[in-house]
Image (tube, rainbow, N blue to C red; front, side, top):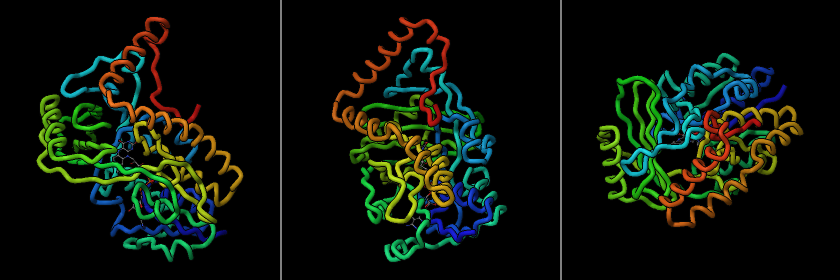
Length: 347
Ligand SMILES: Cc1cc2nc3c(=O)[nH]c(=O)nc-3n(C[C@H](O)[C@H](O)[C@H](O)COP(=O)(O)OP(=O)(O)OC[C@H]3O[C@@H](n4cnc5c(N)ncnc54)[C@H](O)[C@@H]3O)c2cc1C
């Protein structure tokens, strides 16, 4: 049996810890926050993600279905304050909302309970330093998420994301999820509700200004009557490459590139990569195979996104994509009824 140190008590770190502890290994998870739930600058928050539930729970060996709630129609897509009608096979896709952070209704809380039941030890208020990273035993798992410091330490290439985020109490129930594009960002904003909370995030790869936030606020007000009283700045870092190892340490979660590079869906990738990191401790060959399978296509998708990012006409591109989808439906009648999976980790 091995002693395994894991840095980062987020999704990837906890899935890895649970899997290893269940096999009898002695696991300690270190996190720089004072308690479970990640950074209080960004959480609690509601995230929306495509998901293949059965395959995901089977792969990680943990059933989290009660925490992932199917959203109402998805994607609910807005351009400025105008709702776009999408072709049927796009409109019929399914996504799920999940809560992150310190509240009892969050997925973090559930994984924390499972990890402690499995015998994982936690050490909070413990920041991974450069000295500790170098001194950590071979096979330690680094799962510190989309924060800059550790990307720099392990030399993973990344790009910055600027944002604003806000929450509101939400008593209407349901699992709302909408994507908003418009003049406020070269990327997009989203709003998502679950467990009595509405969350909104505006983000962009170019710096955002007060007037962008003001435009986004007006859009949320016009489209849903949402009025968030307090917005916070957010600065995140997205990986621009996928790699499983740094020297003899194992990388996991967003840090290792298990995030969908086009829209930034990172929840499912983080869960899967926790299991991959555990395999890297117990069965490295299988870990490399699985990692390649999951990150296959990362570089191509990132390149496609970067190419698209260089084109300035977001709105025209959006129109073209919708037009193409309508054309596909016209050519192929079956598509009208079909449900298009927006993203697949398992094929
Ligand atoms: C505001 C926001 C909104 C998002 N929205 C969506 C969405 O709608 N859909 C989607 O699929 N994805 C979304 N994502 C991305 C997704 O949440 C992440 O990709 C995923 O949670 C990453 O999981 P992880 O395990 O890699 O890291 P995390 O779950 O972030 O865990 C990292 C942990 O490491 C700790 N840590 C960090 N640095 C150190 C250090 N130096 N020493 C010790 N501990 C450290 C942190 O405190 C944290 O607990 C969003 C991310 C953010 C921030």
